[in-house]
Length: 429
Ligand code: GDP
Ligand code: IMO
Ligand code: MG
Image (tube, rainbow, N blue to C red; front, side):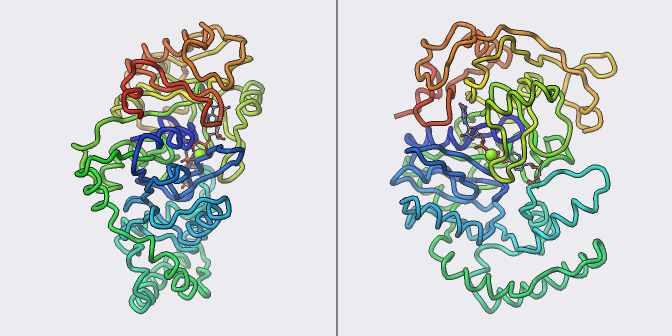
């Protein structure tokens, strides 16, 4: 499984696209079209949101699991865009009949809820993710499978709208815009039908047959609903445990967890970010790394690599191999800072604080490492990396006690180093 070790946008799309060559099935386990996974391939740029990044490899099967919140309109437009780019998904892309539906009123409620928060706005992607998960947990939501029986779908949707309208009027003094909603969903049902499947059963069968399965996380560890910087998080379990529940796949059968981190840190949206750089330095990294949101176009906040946070992510997810992306972005950096610990009110912290207010006040302790000031862009062999870059990676691996199995030196597929003699290297075929 591939999991984001930071606040999302670590380069999971590129990593999953690369690794997919060695796997048969690729499955998404949580989140929705708040995700934006960028893959550059054949001179074309793909931003995958709901569809697993493995889809770009011919012959691979891609699954969207029960833990995902599914917007059928977003899904169909993604499928259409793939078809336009010459990628045929028929017979190899499936969505779980148990995945939760997103309705347009979820987007409306997402915006209304953000507007109603005076100070502490989360800065959501306004895709209706949180409100759809709310309905799921309240056991009033609707699932993909229910879309397939028009009559009962309309009846259940009527009930849902009645309840949601009362809530919306009471909370935000605005009625929901639901004109034409049932008709538009019923109209989409015929196009969705061939994709609907029991994806958990497909995974069990595939595993029994000895096929290689790869799970693609969305968002990242610090955006996890339980373990992230609550309340500045997304509404699902982005961490590795989310794959077992989000796919209905037993944890005893998951054999390795790949954590993806940038060579630095970014965050889009609000909330604490201890190793955030001052805007002057952040601006440079943002420009070199093209750090603008793949979904919303928002500039990403930039900071130094944070080993205190990555230690937390490593233990929480059980990361067995680390992937470091965007190493090339530091090619002109003279000195590189790395946060190695946090102090709070003068005392060192042992564990990640649970409260966002405390995390906002911690002071990172930094180590300064020399930059390499040599281009690493598109290097594909470990021994071609400059010594200072190897020292930087070694410092990270030693601190975390985890192998670095893969290093990314550019957005393209072949700008990838597989570190020799690592566990990660041993799965590739
Ligand atoms: P994801 O959400 O984790 O899949 O990451 P995003 O796709 O949102 O953001 C990562 C961005 O960095 C994308 O624009 C990628 O094309 C780009 N990228 C990935 N790996 C590298 C790399 O090693 N170097 C550079 N320069 N860009 C990269
Ligand atoms: P990928 O998969 C980065 C952030 C939003 C916001 C918070 C809640 O591309 O790494 P939401 O719309 O989910 O309710 O927003 O989570 N966020 C992401 N940040 N990468 C993502 O996905 C994100 N998905 C959500 O910016 O701070
Ligand atoms: Mg992204």
